[in-house]
Length: 238
Image (cartoon, rainbow, N blue to C red; front, side):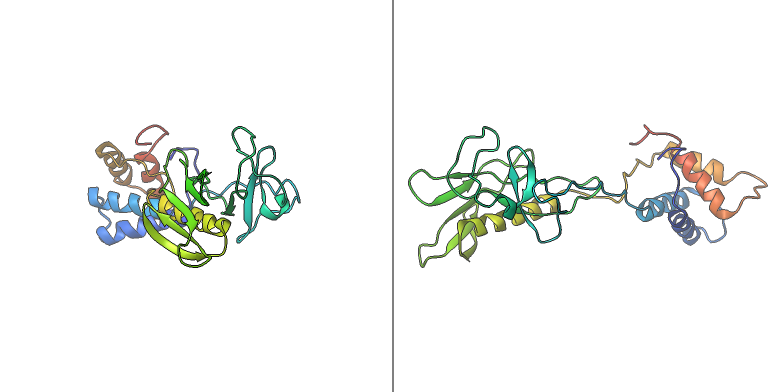
């Protein structure tokens, strides 16, 4: 938070309402300020997500439910736009066995964690694919292989069976990617806005601003000034 930032009116009102619940008499004190600031941070609108480039092949935007794949030169494309293209290692460009890796389209979110696509290696002797590392967040050791009973394909994670009725290895890999994204995103704490540290000094500054004598400002104006006094510039607690 900084002095140049426009404070959202609805969030300021939420802060004022929270403060009023703690201190109905209007007398400011530390718990009142803490409740107000936390209510403001919870109600402040999330930043807008950046617009995503459309598919470079068909130029159509990506939509929920689209299956995507990565071309080594073009980047993210609709999987159907790359139909018939050979599978290659995205780092080296060398041809690889197996289907082109696909993944579901996920709309971009502001300040969101990007879950990298699982990379697969095929066993040299049998129809079995296993996941390689998926970047800094790691991967849950997925294995796709033939169901010993029947013609279906199965998906396992760290030895535990997730499902065993896939019609193809590609379908099982899609399910692995979805499962991996859920596991990663569930483990990452999220907040609608960056939350500054509420230090004792910040509370004191807000108290001083709120408690100025003979103040003729409207309550919402006082709350806005108190919030700006608590976090006067970027750097502290951020």
